[in-house]
Image (tube, rainbow, N blue to C red):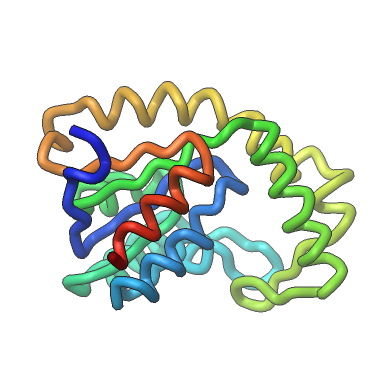
Length: 183
């Protein structure tokens, strides 16, 4: 079944490696379709980049997804069993790693220069993004290939046979699909 034949539901999950554009797409979908936006990063990260304890994180996610309509973005394995079974639509952004790095670079530079405030008062820093062994660039590289393998296998499971899955490998196709939603 091609993407034009699938119906987008009211509980949409957007997945993909860090920097693929999950949140940007989710916000756009939320606005276009009139659905609530849930950003898992905002539920996971506390002040000073402190990760929420798993139980608290799961509770926050369950509360956020208790609505009948949402667009949720994120890849946290700790809440996958909470989020995935509720989704009626999954959008997988699987762009080339070179594009991911390009986007991460410019996003990080913008956030650092503008001192953008992220979740719970957090800000990115030059040192954290470009000099730290836990930078998003290293994280993107470490997870890119495992996400490809894991997501392909997960989406073939019988429990997802009735979920509309949209798998995009380049932004132009994603943008064309997004435009087609409002026609």
